Image (cartoon, rainbow, N blue to C red):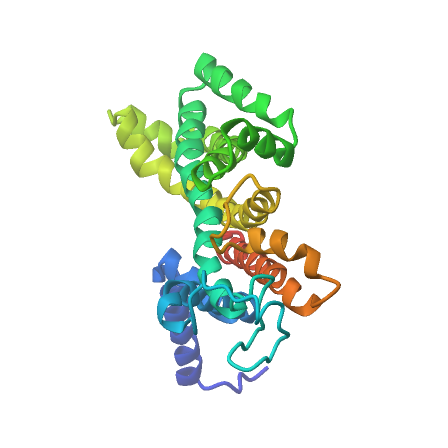
Length: 304
């Protein structure tokens, strides 16, 4: 059989394949993650939506059309599209658009702060438990298991009720319920990594425990823990809003989405669209964090 392909063309094809393989191998991990995210239109869309929520909350003093605390019994419970009140007014005549923008500040703060605090505490505890093992692992993880005996919602309500209403107490209660699951993830990953060959080689070469944790283990633990914590933010926003709705979080007259739902619940039959606006913001923000977490998990999965 006669080869119809010219030898020069075949050489170019082989060279092109070799260059493509070299480029793929030389491409960094985070560059690969970014390229995967760019192809995920759903993640990009909800990431931009979250950025819009953050920017609107950050620039609320410049974007808001009025004072979030200014009341007027004359303008109370005005519908959406009322003159000078694009999203209507609440039960005390306060502009809803203004309170939604300012409410995003407190809602995001109460949703993100507990997760960040739990990420540090739970990650540290899980790292120590997984790396040291033995009695330290037993003590830390069995203590974490105690918190799993209680439903997270009821535990948060119980802690907030014992500490009293307030933003700080709500953040403390949410931090407590988020530490155990993050510690479990960190402990599981650390236990798997510490028995790998390159960790044993680093230990045999004389590397100390801190060096092994910083160079070989921490980089493997941060990815799964960070992705899991990103998904917890949506749960944290819902729980924080729920505590405020029950009177265990933010106190009036502060603008916060959960508290706004509480104060507007009596108006749902009179002006349902205005009363539903805080719930819509909670739903959209929580859904965006949840889908962003799923996108990050897919993009950072090295098996794909």
